[in-house]
Length: 345
Image (cartoon, rainbow, N blue to C red; front, side, top):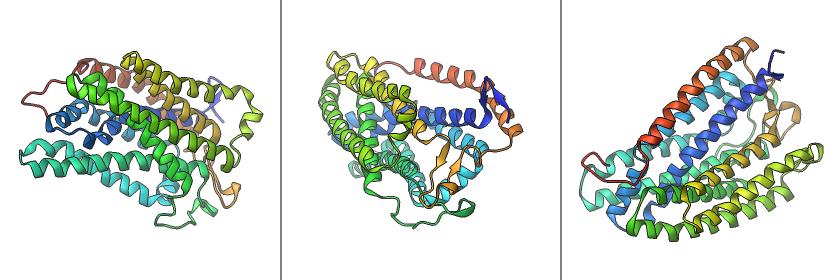
């Protein structure tokens, strides 16, 4: 098996895919979180400002989802096919809500009628909440395992089989984390009465996250099998939950000092450390089978050919600086407080 810097190609591609989806969660997390607060803003002007805060960024942030899905398909086609077929319903709902969310952003301010704007406000709010929740549900199902049989065929139910108690807990925790991230981002982009309103809402969001995260963590330790086994084998990885806890604890401290930029960094680090924990828990498995561990999808039985992975890793090396440069330019260009004009949503 070919290697680069002592790491085999499937493991490298596992890291690439993980990095892409982590970028998507962090960057789109504050977009979805901002939308999940939308109905908590009472005035039309406040809602317009909140939408325009993410206006120049939301469609660019979705690039991470497209690239991540493409990388997953190219590097682990078996994983891609098995995951989509086993969780067909949540993924289809996810796509529907993505379309509704995009439509709400584009159409909300196209007309001035009150009923028109209120209708799109409700659609926008529901879409953001459901997308955040569904992302957590998918993650929980991957952690718990899926009914995968021989030849990686899904043997479980179709409708609502993905909504286990654990999936609901992870979904709510994901929503809470995104709402915290979104409120911090909006505090960076707003001023005046809306800024004061967001300060109040952020406190509620942090309480929501801490409570949901605590319940989810306790449930994971008690009921999800094998969670502690890898830590016994590799005690050095205890650094990950410790770093995640420190990042979480640092957010309220920074918010109280009104250092919202630093708070956004640490809330992003919280996501990164939690996703690293997930990757550590799963590796080298991509989709655990609840029927028989031998039927699990791993980075080795799901990977493309060595030659294909080698070519794609070369493309990654070339494309990564270009992607990083583009996003640095984008965020530098649209930094600062939101100012509405004729081109605003």
